[in-house]
Length: 315
Image (cartoon, rainbow, N blue to C red; front, side, top):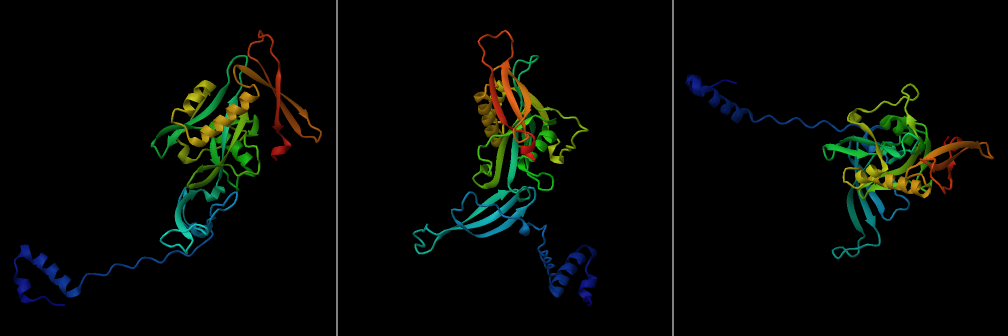
């Protein structure tokens, strides 16, 4: 390509701009590069992630479900058809609606919430509960919760084991008696929110002890950098529960745990003693007794409550 004499004789200040315009007219603007082809689906790609289960029984028919976004949370685009529902605009067609559903498929949409309860002792005549205070990304502020974590099939044999691991990782506690607070063991748990497929099961851990770092490997994840462990009285727990700074699953778990403890007389300044014996089938049974914090109390009837199988039942 050659330039005209006119272009070559233009003064230095205007030559460049005129030359660029001339080239643009002659050559045209370059075409943008085509986008790269999408990667082929694999077992680790979002499209291969399992969808949220319909439980206990489906109401509508899921006609389409695809992953719209996947990182820590997975967002599904779900289209549901309701055969018996019709609209005025399409009276002969079943109603179809698209929804955004979020959840943790890698955790099988299940997680555990644990209430660590420390009964009264002779040295401390009131019960306490261990709480977690940590960064809440949605509010960009600190907030309260109980030890909570998702099921991991690579690490946990059951959701009960998830509860034990989260107790160690977040609260730095171990041992004690782990009590599931849902009556039906086959139930998948409380649904977190209307549009979230995750479900949680609450547990109560009675009288855990401080974690010996060498006994259990319990590293925290990077996002748990802000965790602060606090032990509070039951009275302060109630204030935190209804003060607007605690996560809803933790509030539900805490309330169920308090109900369980009150029904068995393990609150109100009473301390708990534990005795162990072998059951008829060789399993270990733990019996809890509520006794007065002060031995001078009169007219006190000892209350006992068998809280469940502790050894073989959890394996």
